[in-house]
Image (cartoon, rainbow, N blue to C red; front, side, top):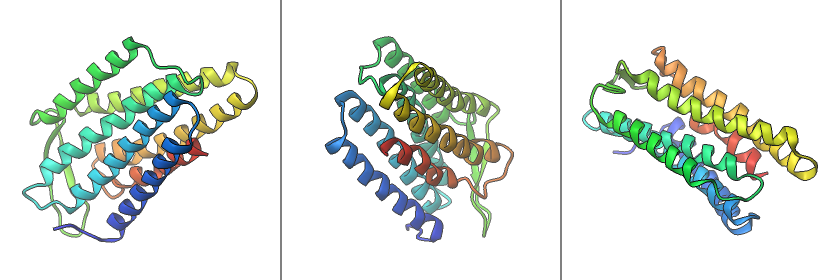
Length: 218
């Protein structure tokens, strides 16, 4: 049975807004590669947001399953942004090496999430609170993967910004600023706080991603 509390309603609304922005990019965006790769970023964020909706709605029996799905979906937000950082704003297809690298790394982390007790051990349900995840001893690898890819992408954008001029410099300023703000806030609530055992705001990263999506679309 689906849960429609205030948080889940907000998640659905945000997912719909992201979908509208994705369609806007697909049909009105300039540059085929930029348009396609940024659409991948937005769709990965949409799936991640919906994953949180279903995770929060899941019964006790299905909570662990949806927890794994949620954390698998989150990996694609990092890898898609990493590739997008090489595409924007030059509209050049990323090198095969970078695609293979991100694909292998992403697959490795997905496998770790799927294997019991490596990244995620179990989910505890406490009445009146957000679900508590019991982490495996290798959770730090998941943290390093997400934070590492976002940091790498931000460094790529920053280097481009420093050597760019004109409209490209302004575009990079907005994209870099949006991702710097949105990704750091989302990682704090969805990666760090939950690592410390505080799950009160583990849904907030999906909403804070509006900074990343909105600034880039603008």
